[in-house]
Amino acid sequence: MIMKKFFTRPELRALRLFFVLIILLSCEKNIYYVYAAQNIKIEIPELIYINKNNFTLGDIAKISGGSRSNRKALAEINFNLNKNILTRSEVLNAINSSGADDVQIQLYMPLNVKFEYPDYEGNFTETADINVNENYNLNDGDQNKLKELENTLKNLASWNGNIEISINGNNNKIPAGKLIDPSSLIPGTPAVTLRFKDNSGKIKNLPVKLTWSQNVVFATRNIKRGEKFLTGNLTVRPMIINRPGVYATNLNEVRGNISNRNIKQGEAIMLNSFTSANIIKKGQRVKIVARFKGAKAELDGILMEDGAPGDVVKVRRSDNKQAILQARIINLNLVEVEIR
Image (tube, rainbow, N blue to C red; front, side, top):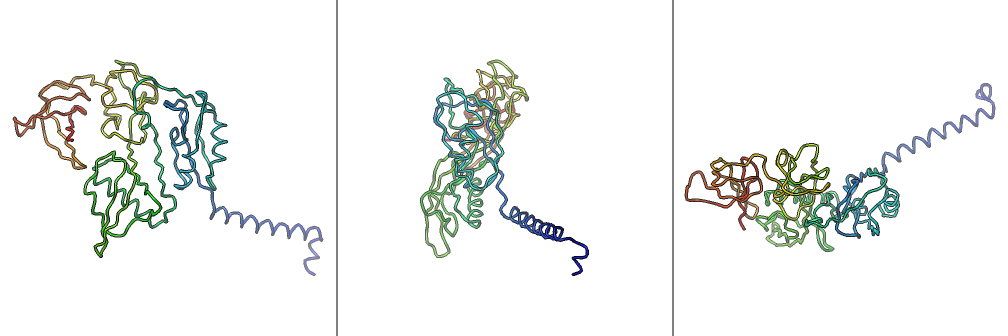
């Protein structure tokens, strides 16, 4: 009765509607908080070098954020181009049909991406810079075990990049117990069978595929033979690696050196594609690094020949004049011996 003195019937209906709206908006906020869409960023450069017309989004794009299952669904989107242009609308249409659930896509690409099909020799399968893991149905506990296992394999390989493990077969459970084999690992190994021993002494095998990646230096524009590498011509981004020790991994290895061949925009910089502006002279004291089955040893040495980064020269140990080795010059102070 009191309310009727202050509010007319239409005003009461409006007041009830106001409270209903408040409740609904409150529920929407709660729902958004619990079921917020995953933010996934997709980055595609304006120029791509590729040696095939059929490719996936994972071959040309960097995909980050979200869950493994959604990254996998997006990375497996197929494209079949009969031209050398991929449009932004084509990518968006493909993403909408990808099967990725509850995602918010941030697409960074120009309206048109140009494709070139290089006719020079190179390993173009390694230019992908996304790691896609097939273990999308592992629970949180197994995901943590998987991350620990990846770190263990990195240590076994003395690898300063990243390793991603994909478990083969239907049984994707990580066995309980201690990893007993392999005791060492060579970087770039595509697959291996891991052996675990539990407290009862029982041995279980786990076959896995391995994806190796590390930061690699790329050219941001065409660089001519004889031209000096400058900071503005270079960038660093992650790349899947099949052949470790082939590519420059930081700007200091490349900057200021001279290109010994023509390099195209977007191409990864190989260690043998440049020479030092200043030749490293015979008698230079260097650090010798030797790697074998994941193990690494270092010792002091002296160059026996003039050379530049990427050259293979004779070097002897400082503590033994008779111990002369063949080593590849990495930079002014470092050479590397490959033991097979």
